[in-house]
Image 1: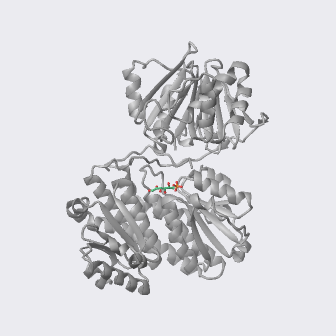
Image 2: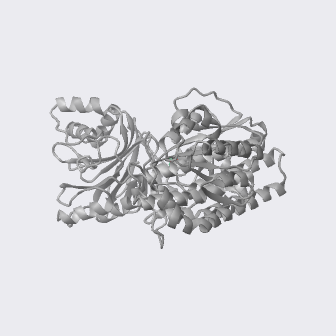
Image 3: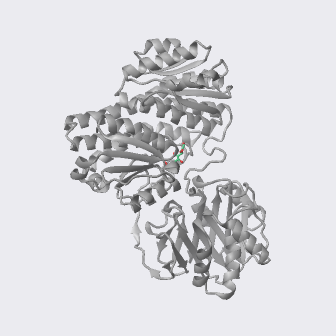
Length: 615
Ligand code: F6R
């Protein structure tokens, strides 16, 4: 969630590091810091609460503008241990201010180590887990070589970490250490970058070394050497990488979230076209043989947040189109549950970033027990793509706003197609039916965008200002519209900070009905299954009978339900399995406008970060 960026080479480092950090700010933005070793071999460190702009201002204010060096490191933070403050910002230094450390991850045994170090006389100035690393290096470097000191430190710490370390004593070297958290080197003849994500340096080089798990690199001005945690030299390959980083900016849009909402139609079309045009590559990437597909008994989906919701929606695709038993799991729950290995179960890990710690660890658990896996992600250079047995790439383009929008609809589109490919191989659908499925997705993408346009002014001028006054909402769905309701609720909580409780509508009378009153709007997401629709209509009546205020997202022919609504949003009929795609754009827009009325920092909601690389 935090990001680390480092540089060692021929040029001054500060500009390079600040630029890299600015690109990784999506990973955390509550504080930032920079340190370098100057030509006089002195360590210099600047930190600021807030993002990179605040850090740049701080550098100027402190008249540190001249401070630069050939070797440096930087950090943007998403707090785990200790509040967001300048003291807790990275880099952290040792007692003598000769060692600087930045960290992404969690040191699980930091409390024990801190106590031990304090007994030895070390003084701590922050509440972070990371500071122990600086003090551990301070001690180890007194008697050991740099390489030995690294081995000693990693043998004593537990947890997940991407660490960058530098010291005045070894002022020619930058050390990069990785366990579980991602870390990669960007290679150039006379300079080396190191960062949590290739986006930090992709404009400078596409030659990348992904540090293997439990390894470290000693980076000098002229190159690097990589070692495993046994101290043996290893030679991870230099790979040419692709990265979807774009310097496009927000354009005319007020927020990235708004821009990305409007990019959904294009994201869906690009995903369909990419998967259609690159059919043979796609099958190779998926790494699924026809025999395997014929033998498949079950498909599992694993993800977090919005990606989990995409999996819940895809359950219906797999059951109804591919006739497969399906189940979705939250990665953070799956990891700590008993699971039963079965070679006939395919697990699809869904993750926009391909780096989410819980999802990645769930994948590793499955790989360790030889379960077939595929990763569905939006980032071709991500850890999940490298580690899973096969992968499927969405083409949403880089998503910058913390709240996922276009990545979600692109995931659903790819999963809809995956269900059809599997069904085709199983002989359940014809080639024509597959082509029709693509057409239906195009139509859904069109309806998604048109619906926003249709209700835009009504929402901006009337609905959003009206509903922004409410403190609580209840969201209801049934069947495939239940995960859609969960996703809609997540958006309202995340960017507007409004509390929402979400239920499958059938659960209403088992308790939540007691909450219904005029002060708590109930939002019902309809679906196109006729039987389920009738049940939803019944649930809406239960709400109205108790003077509930009803907002309905429904389809043109669902007049009985629409007639009950205090506010109605109406959609044309589409393939029933794609109902969530058409409804989600409008609810995202509605929620966005509510957040705007409430003056929320929409692209960077409080307490959150885009890529959750800690457990
Ligand atoms: C919500 C949101 C998050 C992510 C979740 C998983 O808008 O974006 O809930 O979906 O953190 O992230 P990925 O998909 O990168 O694994």
